[in-house]
Length: 328
Ligand SMILES: [Zn+2]
Image (cartoon, rainbow, N blue to C red; front, side, top):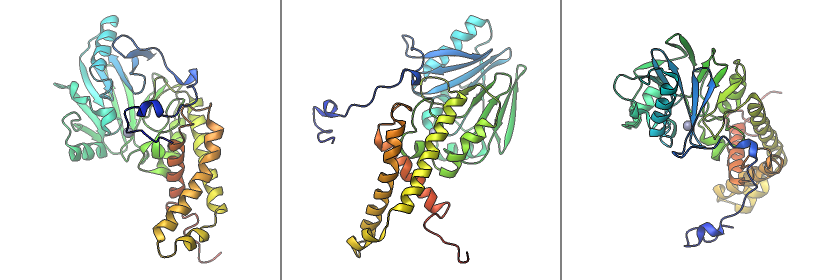
């Protein structure tokens, strides 16, 4: 298919994909390649079209939520622009980490000096492990819940178990009708490879229902260029539920024996043929159903690898087709 990807004309040989629905795209970027918009009142979001960050302006200082390096210094510009327009301080006093990943946190060190960084205790453990100067470990950590109060505003941070990462938290703005929850739902788009590069598949599958259990109208989801709605979460849930149902069907329908017989003592060749066959059977109808519904659903490798991960979770976490009860 992509025969000469390494050749000089590689990009010209790459496949075409379905047009991106207008509804999956966000507002136009400015000349400096960012957009900053009001979510509600003094809560703002910033995007470069692919990543999202947010900040809250208060009389006592600005609270920044995530600092993706792709937005980088434009995050500082966005804060300065809004603070100047509203006549409030542009001094960043707090930075909240949604999770430890470098692509959402790697520009944290832009805000140095008197900034207090806040994150889950596992975020601190991982940032100390990763030892990246762009992502200083948080000074304030919590295990389950933390309420941040700055300048009369309240932000509720909560950990409800592992999902995309073991440290990924829910950031609720009760006074702004908003939830920030990163890297599970991509607003209007499919998850990328392997369940959006997630570590805990059952946690990832359950997380949207936890997100929906909060009251909010606006979701800052981390990707891509616009805010998400409750409907976006529902479509994401339907996509994942369809994958799970399709994987169950395929696991039940595909007989593994012929694959192992075909390869004899090469057990891994049998495993590959069997699992690949199940995943391809399960993923194909999902690609067809969601092309035109979720942007990039026709990039088949995304849905295929996500289906593969969910199929493995069904086998290994729930025991489907692997473990059988001894007694009925
Ligand atoms: Zn992440």
